[in-house]
Amino acid sequence: MKTVKYVVSLAAGLLLLASAAFAADPAAPAAKQTPQLTSADCVKCHAKPPADVDAKGKAHKTKVTCQDCHQGHPPTVKKIIPLCGQCHEGKPHFKLGGCLGCHRNPHTPKEIVFGRDVTEPCLTCHNPQIAQLKQFPSKHSKLNCSFCHDVHGKIPQCTQCHKPHSAEQNAGDCKKCHKAHQPKNVAYAGDTPSKQCGACHSKALNLLTASKAKHKSLLCVTCHQEKHKMVPKCQDCHGVPHAAGIMSKFPKCGDCHGIAHDLNNWKAAAPAAAPAAAPAAAPKTPAHKKK
Ligand code: HEC
Ligand code: HEC
Ligand code: HEC
Ligand code: HEC
Ligand code: HEC
Ligand code: HEC
Ligand code: HEC
Ligand code: HEC
Ligand code: HEC
Ligand code: HEC
Ligand code: HEC
Ligand code: HEC
Image 1 (cartoon, protein in one colour):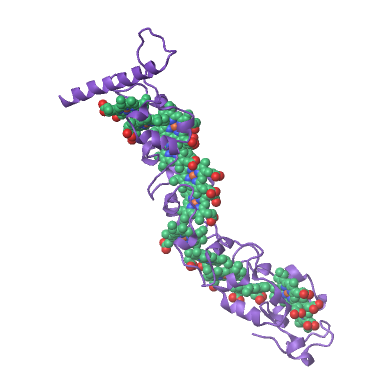
Image 2 (cartoon, protein in one colour; image 1 turned 135 degrees about the vertical axis):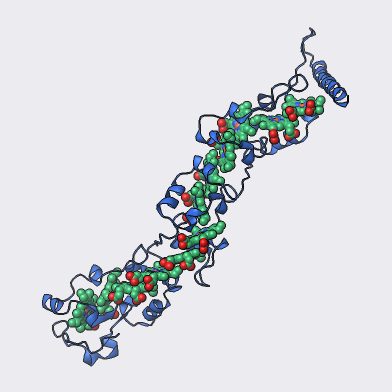
């Protein structure tokens, strides 16, 4: 009973609106014609959809009208809610179900909301990231994309979920050594400051800092290049520094020079003990070899 009355008054309302539009238009033909509802009329009875479209309709404001999507109107036409697939087809993304699960409001299509357990739908548009996560397995590979990217397009800070290695490190430093989609594949740029390494290798940093030899002025990464745990050979930089005879007798540089972080410093420590004309007079057992 109630519904019938409602429908009748709605139909009358729509008619009234339409005839008012005709009356206001002097160019309208006087002949009898089915009154037409236009997209401009909708706002007279529906407040929110037009306001949403106006503010954030994006392409649904500029490329289509209300009536491209809603063809007809109750009670004359009963089903006037369109399917997304009427207009969107031909891409893997459009084969996903539940469009309104993420595009919650068709009148604001770019306002996208999703839970923290989404991966597959992201792959309809993004590929390199999953490829990296699979190629370099880590605990990140087991997380869903949206566990980290909880809002579309948002890039999280590592420090949202992890503590830095030292108090001196901040969120911007993480990327010097880590990439999010391959976090265990630690690699670093040639200008990474030594104190970043010192966060875990305090012994090496302290030795090098205290040393008087020229290696002191080099960055850790000048010697340990690019990839974590790379260890250089002295000859990579120094070639063959001494006569062939000496080199074959004492194949290890360290026998005379100590370790790279703390080279023996004959000149400063005990000049008298240094061979007069090294390497020709190099000692059999270096007097100041450090352990
Ligand atoms: C005179 C007031 C009036 C005007 C003008 C009007 N509507 Fe409606 N509309 C209603 C009412 C009332 C309902 C609820 C009808 C029902 O549920 O049977 C409704 C329902 C709807 C629905 C929901 C249908 C459903 O299946 O849930 C849509 C969509 C809609 N209108 C779109 C439009 C569009 C688009 C326009 C402009 C082209 C428009 N309306 C103009 C009053 C109006
Ligand atoms: C791109 C297609 C599209 C356009 C353009 C569009 N709509 Fe809709 N509209 C929909 C869909 C889909 C739904 C159903 C939403 C749902 O099920 O949550 C809907 C729902 C509605 C409803 C009923 C639910 C509600 O939110 O009140 C009304 C009324 C409505 N639209 C009016 C309009 C008006 C007025 C315009 C123009 C300003 C418009 N729509 C533009 C697709 C569209
Ligand atoms: C009547 C046709 C039509 C329907 C129905 C329709 N759309 Fe669209 N939509 C378009 C057009 C046209 C564009 C702009 C061109 C394009 O991106 O394909 C568009 C663009 C979009 C955009 C991008 C907006 C932007 O500004 O970049 C999204 C997101 C979108 N639609 C989602 C949806 C969803 C979700 C549905 C179903 C609820 C839907 N559309 C239903 C016609 C439609
Ligand atoms: C898991 C969430 C999710 C689901 C489900 C989803 N979308 Fe999307 N959609 C997105 C995201 C995220 C974007 C990217 C928005 C951007 O470009 O900023 C997008 C973009 C779009 C675009 C604009 C870009 C383009 O490729 O044209 C359209 C149109 C679209 N979606 C339609 C749909 C349709 C139709 C469905 C259902 C078949 C759907 N979406 C299901 C999340 C989703
Ligand atoms: C319909 C295609 C589509 C879908 C689905 C989609 N995206 Fe996007 N995404 C885009 C586009 C387009 C951009 C903007 C690209 C740009 O700015 O270079 C973007 C940007 C991003 C960005 C920011 C990129 C940057 O360089 O700042 C992130 C992060 C992102 N998307 C993650 C996701 C995640 C996570 C999902 C799944 C929940 C997802 N996207 C689903 C199309 C999509
Ligand atoms: C552990 C958190 C985390 C997970 C899981 C994650 N990302 Fe990211 N993503 C990030 C961070 C952080 C960045 C910023 C770049 C960086 O630090 O390497 C990023 C960057 C991006 C970008 C920008 C372009 C680029 O590659 O740098 C896109 C697109 C993106 N992620 C998509 C995805 C997709 C798709 C997935 C799931 C397959 C995913 N992400 C999983 C944290 C994550
Ligand atoms: C949204 C939270 C989140 C963000 C953002 C995030 N991670 Fe993680 N990360 C995790 C979780 C959860 C684990 C697994 C922890 C566990 O199981 O102990 C993890 C593990 C790791 C691991 C150890 C991997 C393994 O397999 O042992 C590294 C390294 C790591 N993260 C580095 C980073 C870096 C670097 C960033 C920024 C580029 C980052 N994470 C951003 C949540 C996050
Ligand atoms: C100077 C390079 C460097 C920087 C900068 C760096 N890390 Fe690391 N990180 C590493 C190395 C190397 C490992 C692996 C140690 C191993 O093999 O056990 C690691 C391991 C991790 C792990 C795995 C668990 C652990 O503690 O061993 C997490 C999580 C992590 N880093 C997060 C971060 C975050 C967050 C930042 C930024 C605040 C950051 N890292 C900055 C080099 C770096
Ligand atoms: C998060 C802590 C962490 C950071 C930061 C870190 N390392 Fe390491 N590093 C380790 C661990 C753990 C090992 C393995 C130690 C072991 O196997 O005894 C290691 C091992 C090494 C090794 C030895 C490889 C070998 O064969 O013995 C070198 C060289 C090295 N790291 C250099 C660096 C350099 C250079 C940096 C700065 C760019 C750095 N590390 C930053 C934790 C870290
Ligand atoms: C990445 C390149 C590199 C590597 C690897 C390297 N060095 Fe050096 N070394 C240098 C540079 C640069 C200097 C300073 C040269 C200068 O200023 O004249 C230097 C200086 C020295 C000096 C002179 C020290 C002084 O204070 O006068 C000795 C001795 C030396 N290196 C021995 C070694 C030994 C032994 C190793 C291996 C344990 C080694 N180097 C590994 C680059 C390197
Ligand atoms: C001049 C080149 C050079 C510089 C600078 C350098 N290293 Fe080394 N490092 C080496 C060489 C060569 C070795 C192999 C052991 C040796 O011969 O002394 C080594 C060994 C190591 C090792 C494994 C053995 C150990 O001592 O624990 C670690 C860890 C390490 N370096 C970290 C660092 C860090 C951190 C820095 C910066 C504070 C640094 N190194 C600076 C050349 C260098
Ligand atoms: C038998 C001992 C001995 C061995 C083995 C040895 N050196 Fe030396 N080296 C010396 C002495 C002694 C000096 C001169 C010290 C000085 O003047 O400070 C010297 C000087 C150097 C210098 C500095 C030259 C300069 O112009 O200041 C470099 C670089 C060097 N050695 C590299 C190496 C490398 C690399 C190896 C291994 C391939 C090596 N040495 C093996 C004893 C040795």
